[in-house]
Amino acid sequence: AVEVVESGGGSVQAGGSLTLSCSISGSAYTMNSMAWFRQVPGEEREGVAVIYLNSGATIYTDSVQGRFTISAADAENTVFLQMNSLKPEDTAMYYCAASVLLGVRSDMDESLYNYWGQGTQVIVSS
Image (cartoon, one colour):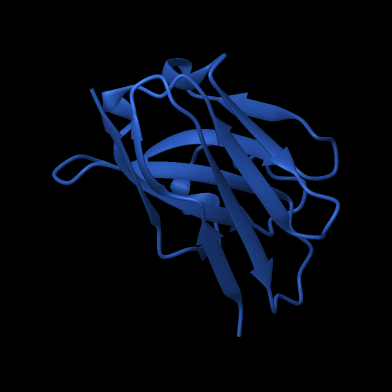
């Protein structure tokens, strides 16, 4: 069975930093892209950052551009989300997702992601 393991969430004051980690194991398929999404209760889930594992190309939502960095580890199917200058509005449940659709630009289209983690909570206090 495919396992998606996220870690690194927690509570931090505004202006602080956190690093989220995500590892995927058990898949028979090559990952095309991995991404972080986030969701606040009562709101739709939104894409935060995406990385295409072959090219290293990244995409960020405007609100985190310049503050967050998504990167891939040397270990297969492992990505990080370095979050700096955190703001209270970054408070959300953060989900890791992966797409096995090679050659498809999954970007931040949730429907194109095959594997999802359970989420890790990030709380930023003012």
